[in-house]
Length: 270
Image (cartoon, rainbow, N blue to C red; front, side, top):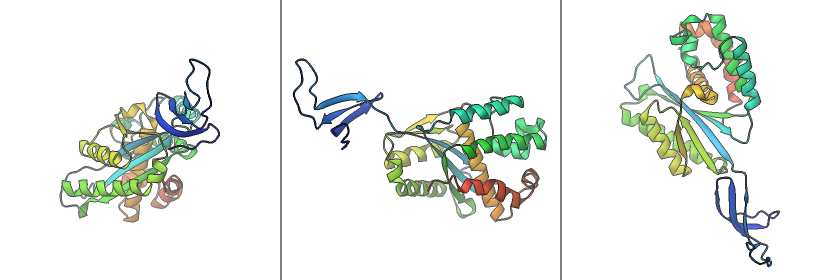
């Protein structure tokens, strides 16, 4: 039910392909062959929400080298244009000869995989380019973190994740249902998590579409990867568990908290 007094609409009965239709308060006569004025059919703006999902950890047994499972969601209102910010980011990367580069924060910090060819200074600059992009754009995020030493089996982790995600969606249902359409972008890295997302979001919101994506094609997915890594590092800072490579990259735990983790607090979905 809609009551838009400027348009005289009392009931919206459908919306799709950028058009809305329904019944108007104006019941006056129309000319021959015209659509009655109490029925409207017009272009409308659909409110769309994009959610980019990444994870750290797995559904296997507890391992001291991977003690946490982190689920990260980055929320972007499609009405907010971030194209100029993306262009500035790409321009900065292009000037360094790394345009169209796909960020993967964990290996970048540890100098693994494709980042072996870059020294510490180069990797820090790459990290900061994406981090500064995050600081300037209007997005929100939320992390669900589970300490796996309290999880006895895979089904227990699935249950805990499902409950925590459902609790988050329930607590923020009012703001989330303000959107006409919700899209989840995930690379299906873990089928178990994909099933949890499909179930929880469709129960809470209904009609949520999950899109299987290639991470390199979406900077906001790479942002989710960064938030996920920083969420994990936040847990490790609190427990004094930072590795030598992590301390070397961020200089110190204090600098990590002051320069990066405090900024994240301002982006938290509340």
